[in-house]
Length: 109
Image (cartoon, rainbow, N blue to C red; front, side):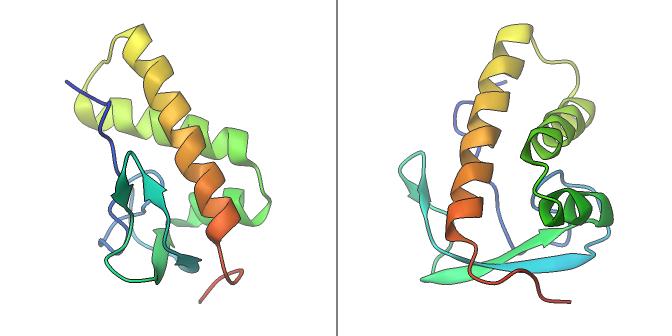
């Protein structure tokens, strides 16, 4: 498995942070680039969050948000080697930081 090219796909039916469902809250965000790829096809878009991830975003608990995302990824894709988990955590931290910097409004309910 290669997690080196993990890019979230906002706008799906599942949470864009952890891939759980159902979607509970939406966050407007301007476009940004991760791994040399734009996140949205437009200048802006929305990120969907399940109830738990929305709680973490709203409380700005980025560390626990990243831990949850890594844990859910590993559960969905099977056990991942430790070195891949470290790399995945670093990538998700970067994505969450970029999301935080580019979020344009607190939320859309």
